[in-house]
Length: 417
Length: 204
Image (cartoon, rainbow over all chains, first blue to last red; front, side, top):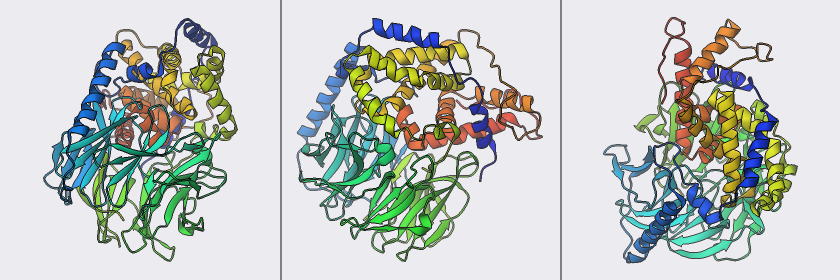
C-alpha cells in the first residue's frame, strides 16, 4: 500500500472555493448568444487540437483540407492493397510506449518501433492481435480529441494493410477466425460495424436508435463470442444512462435481431468470453456506482447467471479467461484512491474459489492476458514505488513476477481463447 | 481500473433520473436553442469553476478558463455525438482551457491562494497551515497536465478510463501521471530529513 499522500491530496483538493461568481457565467452566456455554432463536421475538425504535445492549432480551412486528404490517402491505401494469402502468425509482444507502437520478442527483448502512418498526428492507445496472430489492430487517437481516430490493421511483420477512419473512442474485437473485426463506429451515429482484414466495412450490425452503447474504455466493452455467433456489448434501452444501468446485449454479426442477455438494476461493465461460450461480466451492486465497487458474474447465452462469491463487490478492474481450463484471472483493487492504490491479481478456479497470484507490491494491475498454454499470466503493472507501468509475467499458480518491458501504456501478449 | 468512492463523486449519486432530461436539452442546444444551453450549463457552472480553480490555483484564471470552455462548448456542440457524455466532454474543454490559461499566465502575476482554516478536513501531518502550504507549493510544482489528471481523479472521482477519455491520453499514461505526480508531491513536501525541500523536483 502506498503512503497517505493520496488521502491528503483528496482532503486538500476538497478545500478551496467551490462556487464561482455568477456574473462570470452571465458574461460567458452573453458571448454565447453573440456567437454562432459550427456545423458538426467543421466542429469535429477544429476540435482536433494539442493537449500533450506542442502541435499547432489548425484553422478550419486547413483542418478540413488535412482531414479530407488524410481520409483519401487512408482509403486509397486500403483499396490499393491486394488481398493475398494471410501473413504468417507472430508470437511477438505488441505494445504502446509514449503513444507509439512497438513490437518485441515474447521475452521482451529486441523491441523495435513500428510506424503507423495516420493523416493527423496521433497516439496509438490500444493494440490487439487477431486470434491466430496474423494481424494486429491498432487504435490511434488524433491527439487531444475523441472526435477523430483510426483503426489501423497491420500484418504480423508490421506492414500497414488497412485503415478505418472514425472517432477516437472505438472499442473493437476480432472475430474468432481472425477474418473480421467489429468496431463501434461513429460518423454521426453510434453503430457497430464489421470490417475485413483490410479495414473495409462489410456490414453494419445495429444502430443506436434503440441501444445506447456503454463506454467502458477501449477494450473489454465489445467482445466477439468464440463461436462467432454474437458480439456482446454493454448498453441500455434509450432513454437511459448507459453508465448507471447498462445491461449486456448480444448483437448478431449477420445483422439479425439483437438479444438482451442480462437484466439488472445495476451497471454491467467489462466483458470476457470463455472458450466454452460463457461470458464473465463485471457488475456493480444494486446501488450502482459509486456506492459499491464491481463484482463479477458468469452468464451463459441462455441468460443463466452464476455470481462469483469470492469476487463480490471487490473492485474488479479486468477479467480474462484462460485458454482452455476455465480459469478466470481478475485484477482486484483492494484499496481506494483515498487510502492509496493497491491491486491484487487473483485466479478463480472452476469451482469458484479465488486464489491470490499477486497479493501486494503493485499499485496497479491491468490488461491481464494468459499465455497460450495457460501456465503464465501477462499483465500491465506498476509496482509500488517510483516506477512506470510495464509488461510483467507471473506463473499462474503464483511465483515471482518478471518485468519484460518497461514504460508501456497498453499491450497485447499471448493468445486468447 | 478499480471503482472508488470520492467525496465529490458521491454527491453525484442519483443523477440517473436527470440523464434523459439533460440529453434532451443537449439535443435542443445542438439545434441552436440558447435557453437549452443555458439550462445545461448553469447547474454545472460552480463545479466547472471549482475544477478550474484546483487545476490553476488562480481564481481569475479559473474564471477565464470557464468562460472559454463555455463558449467553445456552444460553438462546437454539434460535434458531440453522445448527449449522455455532455459533462465529461465539457470537462475536456475545460481542461484544455486550463492548459491555455496557464500558458498565458506565465506572462502575468498569479493570484495567491487564500485557504480557509476552518475546513472540516483535518490534515494528518503536524502544523496545519504549514502542511497545507507544503501541499500548495508541491502541487504548483507539477505541470498543468499532471495537475489536471490529479484533479479529475482525486476531486471529481473519474476512473482512469474516463480520465483517459477526457484528457485524450492512454489509460497507462493516466496511471503514470498519477504515480509520478503523487511521487513528486511526496518528494517536494518532505526531504530526506523530514524538511521541506525548496525548489523540489518538478514533473513536467
